[in-house]
Image (cartoon, rainbow, N blue to C red; front, side, top):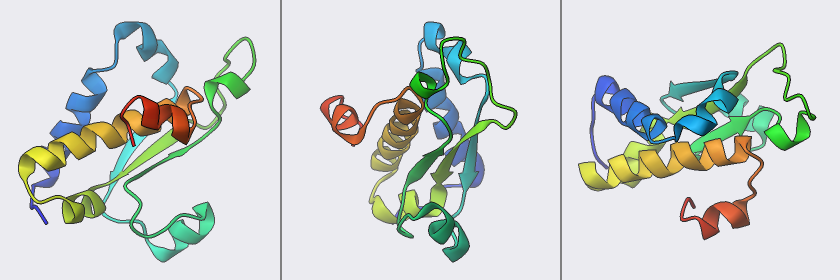
Length: 124
């Protein structure tokens, strides 16, 4: 397990977001990225996910929004779980890499990519 301050963790999440090419940024305007400590039991039940999940995309992928890509009234959300990520890593470098992979993985879901495609891209 590695320890990192919430501010350092947030900076690593922002660094991952900064890697997204400009031509894709407009498609992320109605997506909120939220860092949480750990998913609680209620969250896990509501989203049918295990308690050791690293991140989760909750929303409607772009390919399902229709031709005009009109934003929905509520934003899509990407949850990144700080404590879960910190618990699985043994070094700061590993943690930074896992944060990057998790953020890009969840953004991939927003763009309609499934688990197999994300794994092919190295985001598994």
